[in-house]
Length: 503
Image (cartoon, rainbow, N blue to C red):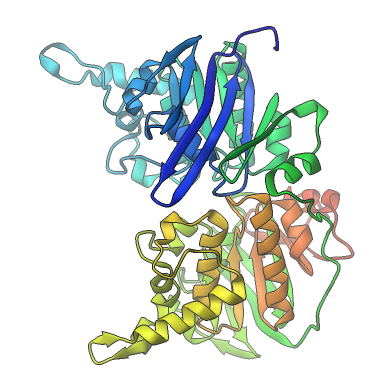
């Protein structure tokens, strides 16, 4: 690879925003048919660098060279014309339109007199969806798709162009394990065709599975490039955050109190059935299973977003009826949802207002909200959770993923719950912030909260949980203590082959 010429070179890229030097002289190159991973903490400059490459931002200094020729890309259209395709981390789909219309948005095939050639459009998109093993068709309305399937539509867009470089920005954040396999097969096919891949992800196992080289950014600066087969996770982590992390499983357990939450025979149609478990004060109970196992649906039922068809929910031994989120909050149950940007935050709102949003009615004096009370609550949870933001006035959408997640957690802790449910606590968060969130979950349990953690990442579940509940197709298969659980018996349980029957 060293003898070949890079298909793409970024040299000395500088990008500044008011008061921020987001990129400070970054160099980056990609060879033909190479998967080059780009890593760094949230805010390190990865997405900014790729937006410069895709023509969304103009660099203050530096140059872009494609096939040995300097180019200037003033917008995404010019980037596409130069063979640069960016698959965004944030979905950019028109939900009222069909899959076919989204895939060729702005480039719909035309017949005479400018009419859209729907037959050609649907045939082209149908063949792409078949290659991606999608179970939906060109005429499907995008708004009806799950987040994972919307991500596949984004990926389908990239396959419509004769690309030289395809940038995948956190492509698997919402994909199932089966969809990840399909994605990696697509990447390998592109690689075999000589297409270069830039792969941005916080998931180390993916990086070492798919990439040839790894470049690390920190604080907007280039920190080094490593050959994937010649390096280790610890070496990459040290480049990213300047220190090693302790990946050992949690074995420290605080004082476990009485049962706070008890669920008995809970069912919700075909989503899950006959679910029974308990959570004690000071305990973290982890829920693990494949996508569709029913984990999130149970959390949504406990928070009043779904109505159960049978079963009983008890808090401190007393049966409660939860028909809405307001009922859940009144009973001391809070839910940190799996998608913080779509379900947990108002991105254009400032930090203070996001944290105090659920209780704003309690802080009004006549028609006015008490500004001092809101700031006091924000200051309390900023200090307690170590939220890093320039001020309470900062828009949440401008914070890193880790700090956004802390804002969501702070919002619900401010409601003083007895039970805190955290769904996918570190999705899209870098390794440094992930370790902070894990420590925070353990600290909350030690403070007396009854905590439920739902995660698709096995190392996370093993690290933070005192007990692990394994689910398969809407049923609890096994329940493990921290001493009993390991990767083998957990995988068996969530595959439905543990002990052959539901717990």
